[in-house]
Length: 489
Image (cartoon, rainbow, N blue to C red):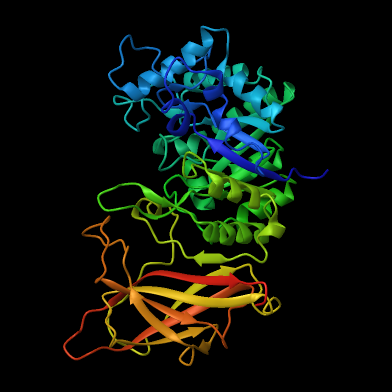
């Protein structure tokens, strides 16, 4: 049986939908999550219906968001509840309105349910006097199941079980003390949900952490779920790090899913860099970054791509990217930016690390650091169409008098043209959102004679010499390989 080739867009119901529009909600506003991606390459819309404090559709079984409050102090939360109720008062069920509009626009429609949502049992905690025990609590499992039974009655394609938010993005599914004893209980819960949903003719999707040891540490028996045929698609990701990762470690889940003949969809996380000064948000990914990540995912064997949270309201640039990722042939001879992810403390705590940053504490010709990077372009076989390949390395605490040895796959780059430019927009520990023109430099090396290869590459770098009386070390904050195409090469 041919596996579905999907291009998926996720709307979390809140930030660019129910938080934004004013009640009473018009039908045109209710259609917005569908209409803004209609006519692009997106053929599947996923709607996030659950947060720990309520559901984002007019549920008869669970708890509607903020329905327990007579008065709401927060105007944003008030809009959420009133938008849903204003449609319901006119005989319109928001969830079915969205699903019907998606079908009208020839898209599949799935709901996504955060599995860290436990109505009525308190916040999970290892201390029973403080909170609940998550899905180790049979009452919590039963209440979840009843909500799934309700969702399965809608005219939709399926339900996505979102385990990807734990840890780092939602309460834990199982508290630490219960993981060793209740992993099989959690599997029974998934099995029961899957059997019921499929009896209704629906599919079961799955979001999971992209690192297998993180899944194991949370009690998720992913391989068992796949081997038993409980899942219809898988999306590896990590809420703890929302930056696009051109090197995301998904080989293990692609292999396991292939063995079970289950499609895998690569997650293009929406951001790539810290935002403007004193602003805690991020910059959205560029088309070049998107193509690099998408190409690496496709090379690893995914069956399609999944993204969300693009710069809103979606404009021509965002719609163009959603069209491009649905057709891999459009990305073959298009500019790409293979940027290595930078290690974040929050995600590293959960086992999702990264090579960078790398400290070189002092000048030492023998202290050569190795940095792996994978690219899907073929600089050798497609050299007639490639106009330029640039290796860019951002180094903190460096000066122009510093001397480095840099090798690509064992070949020295000393004869390649090299420039130094300002390293502005670097994240530094003492001031994480300031633009610094003086704390770092980019080394930009044109790869004319020495070129990367398709697949795995290794950059080696050492700090060979520093000026007298400058003894401090340097830090490699960022590294990327940029590939530019042209009609004439």
